[in-house]
Amino acid sequence: MRAMPLALPFKPRLLFQRPPLQIALALLMLLALLQAGLRLFGPSGKLVSVERKTWRLEIDVERRLEELGSSWCAEMPADATELSRRLMPDPQHPEQPAAEHCKYRAPGWRTSWRAQSTGTAPQVPQWPQPPLRVEPLGGITNGPTPLGIERLGERYEFYELELAHADGQTWTCRLPRTRWEAVPLGLRFRLPVDRYGVANCAGLITSNPAPA
Image 1 (tube, rainbow, N blue to C red):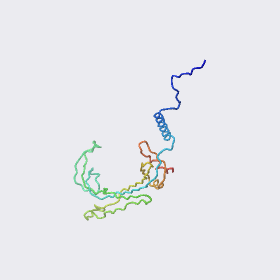
Image 2: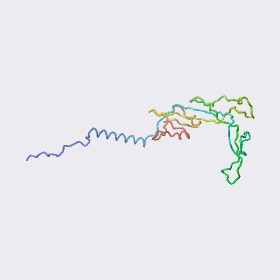
Image 3: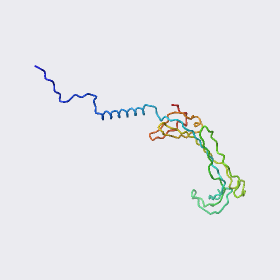
Image 4: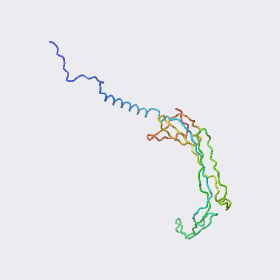
């Protein structure tokens, strides 16, 4: 008797045959896994280069002025001119009797403006040399330190690296002068950057970055 062919209830299908949409989704998932693996196990941080090194030096210019003030009369500055006085209780010592409180005018140094000088490496940082007023106010010499003259006050230093990534992102790291001087222009290294795009410059403050 001749054997009859076996009829299958379904058509045979290749194991790896898939619709194009499923193939595309599988490739996207594979790419996402590869990117995640690079983040976890690849080099950390953003590869950046030192594009510019900038410096800014500032000095407060103070001017001798006469201002109104008030305090307990016993604590009034020696060069003050008394305007008025009255008895007042001391809130910090309510158990003590009232003491004399004075209003007065007294000379003092106040910041009038700030001088500034800026530059970029390889320029050597230099402090500004602002012109100072040395003539007394109204030409009146009142005391050893006349009103109206100026002097140099507090100084401020700022040294920064401008860093750039190949995708156009930029960051600025402020460093002490010794660290700023030690980092060469054009150096490429990996900069720690968090998920918000904020750079962690702390490592640059303590040591030189390893070239990449």
